Structures are given as structure tokens and as C-alpha cells.
Image (tube, rainbow, N blue to C red; front, side, top):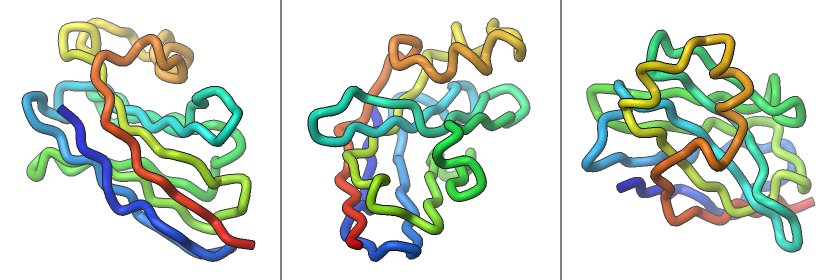
Length: 133
């Protein structure tokens, strides 16, 4: 089970950290991802972190502004959002891949597959982030 929280209202140019608490699975063994969905749009990839080695991957629209991380001791994942823009307004979802798949995916395949929502087995309920202009 995944529980995202910490969303809210933030001004353009501001920062926000969105945590995702995991239970029943361990972030150390599961590839993790963040996706977002704005009104009237499809769910889109934001960022991912690979269980093996902690390699990260970002959508071009957030690269350099957002940071995905994890705390294996607390069994948490995080999305740090900086220099936010109104276009970042969306519901943000954290997601996880089951360990058996996370462990056998080679790095070169992971970069592409980690951007696909269908790869993920577990999803949080989402948290609303609204950026005011």
C-alpha cells in the first residue's frame, strides 16, 4: 500500500516536498515512480528511481527542478519540487513495481519501462498540488 501526502497550494517559483509512505512492500526492493494527472489530461510520467543502485530518471519538463529520492530506513519515497510552475498543477501519484520484476530488469530497459504507468503494480491514492500564478 502507498500513501502520498503533503500536497497543497504553492506559489509559482516556490517549493514543495511530497512524501509517499509504503506499507506491505519495501522501497529498497521496489522500483518507485511518480506520475501526475491534470484535469482533462492523461496521466504522465514525472520521475522514477530504480531499486537496484538508486538510478533516477526524469521527464524533460521537470528535469533540473524536481528530485526523486527514497529513505529505505523509513520506507518512504519523496518528490522534491522546486521552481514550480502553474503547469505543474495536478494530482500526483506515487507508484511501485513488485520486487520480482524490479530485481530482474536490466538498467538499459529500465529507463524506458519506468516511464510507463502499466509497469507499476501498486498505486497511492494521489495528492493534489496546485501552483498559483
